[in-house]
Length: 532
Image (cartoon, helix red, strand yellow):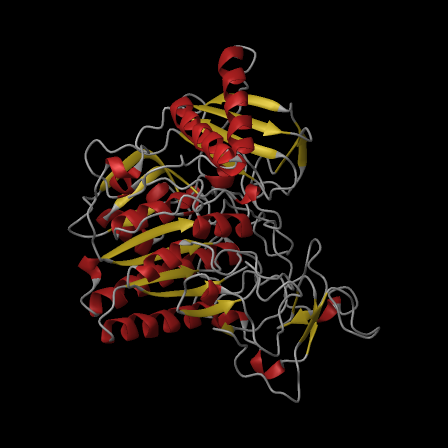
């Protein structure tokens, strides 16, 4: 009886939330019937790429022709978001359809993090896998591997992607400024020499272990903050490791490797006659910014700009691969980023010195680590030739909604206890006439500071529980700025979030504070009830 009562109350809270938010475009999915289609799906997620880093969004100091071509053939969103301003929480919410702040341990994952998404969790990948799709993640993972004890680098690396819906994975296991610099294929590190086992830890393994501090004069890229432990390829990283030398990669080869692995997966899926879902998780333009020799020195913005050019090349290669295979017209491509931009992020690579007039976050304040718009409003493009009419959309969409939206695309049901904050925005993502996006969105930083952004239409509430905001202006070095706990901005009139209007509109602010607190406490924003 108590369980039934709790379930009834939970369902009531969900519907109240929906009514309170006046969720235009996110009504219960059963109210809309998209039918079932089987296009291939490719999600290309950049890393630390800002809204203003691509020329289709107005960049003048750098040109991104492949990304621009994708936008020209598809739908460019001016209100496209990721859900968090750092990588691990965005990736968690993208795959699970649930805000990361609801799940402990979703801050930036350390090198030896166990798997953050438990085996058997309903994910975007599992929903498409159940619909008959071949599924793969290729590139940066940063969601942990292994059981509670963490990864067994020399043994069986599970659970991981294969336990949450992916058929294949070829991974950079953490992020490249963290150790170790090895790949993971499915459940193992390839090319490991048993005579040279890989060890990864958080303490110096020996007094004479070279680090970015003790051997700083040997570095090919100097560090500016924190990235000064184990050295690989002339670059010191966060964390310690030894061994595994035969399995280690060169930073310069990452992009080429992702592209080749993606081509092989697409070819294998096509040969098997299966539709496919590819999560292409690029590392550009995250630090350390060490790109293929083909791109070094090719931009005016230094290594960060070079990394953006390399990312653009990756997009072009994926597009060309689909075209060569005759799959371009039957593939939905989503281009996005895991968070907003950062210039100096631990290495001295001239990102600030060579930035010039470039506005990485476009017209927005903040960037990576920030709940101001620049932290989560990023490039967002959908392209499906013949299905999506080219153009620009002002509808609010978010990476967290891809789980529910793509499930609707292929006719899959969402369990009531899964994808708790993911809404079916498929009509908006496809640019259907009159389709609406979100009317509300919660934004978070890394999750530990009590910082949230809450957008409802033109209004944006910013909450900083500690009274400080990080990275207020992305072009400057990281810094903390004192701010009130709550601020209110009118994004239509003030996209840079410069003028706090809380004193002028106290009722608007009070209502948004209450709705934000309700949404956090309720444990979900997607109503319990019918699904596609």
